[in-house]
Length: 146
Image (cartoon, rainbow, N blue to C red):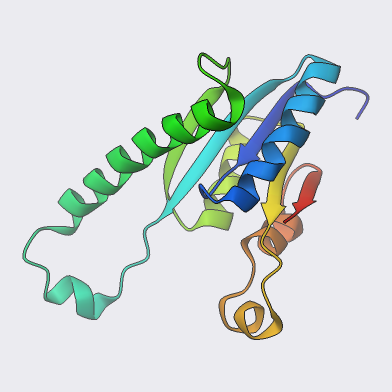
């Protein structure tokens, strides 16, 4: 890769993920790259929970995505400034799957994401979105430590 033209920057709205914004904007400035900031709303719901829900699952997911869109716009404005020239993307699905899908579809040159550095127990039980993206990504992944 001689140049970087497009960057996929992931966020979960945590201050840890905000640290990756500085790295991504630095890369974008150096290479004249376009940044797409993505947030993935995890859509995995327990079947037991669905059975007892009074409202439909689609209605809940629609509200979830709309809320995430507002949060993403606010988060980006807070960390990149008002009127930042970046693309915003909210996706619904399994986070690592959606990040890899978007990177592939958009033919991005690099994914920039932060890692939470969770402890061994948490990592063993839940796994790591960052680790899963690293294994499956179609391009280099720049991991910013939390």
